[in-house]
Length: 283
Image 1: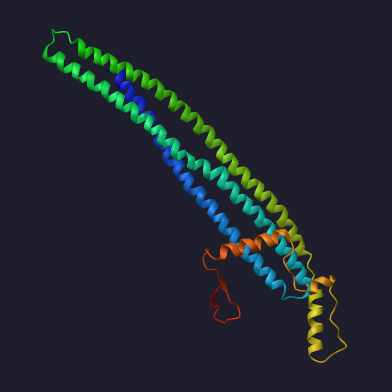
Image 2: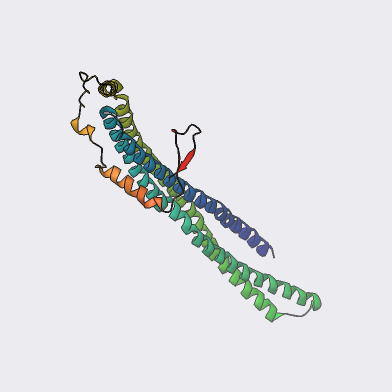
């Protein structure tokens, strides 16, 4: 009977191990899936910002138009990196966590099978004990044989279960290390690339000379008032006076993602600052 109690303790440890993994791996899976979705939503909002920057740039004077063009291109590059981040999160983090559902189910089935064998052993022991109490002097060969057989089955099943749980625990520890190492690597790669692009974008904005645009603006005002001696200052880059089209790969992919997500995404709300009450207009 002491052996049976010892097996009970083993099973409780095994069941707690599986239950703990089931609880936390399920939570990790839910949270990381949500993390990936929210990152995708951030990408979508940034894609919308790129589109708005393009539209705005085409309404401005040459210097700012060129600056905003470059800024939109840089921001679009970041969204390409973010798209890669989302895909890697789903492949290397979310999917491995999802697969644990099947593995946990199989391990629980092994524990259930062992419990069935163990219960049969207990049943045979109790049966033998009742027979001994009724007839202490008689030999109960059949009952003793059944107990022996049940005990052997339980011992064999216990060993198999120990091996299964040992392998489960070892694989779980290795997997949790790899999954979150991959997560950190994905985030480091994204942020490293994003920092590089954002640094370039900041430098571009910092180099913007608004005085050139002010001179051009003032010249246009003077011309409109009839002062034809004042001429608009020519753009540093002649092509920047033309409306800008999406000619970079990053911007094209950003605009394509924006078009693809418009049908099934939530309505985007933009503040109309021309309205004194800041009314919300729905796109």
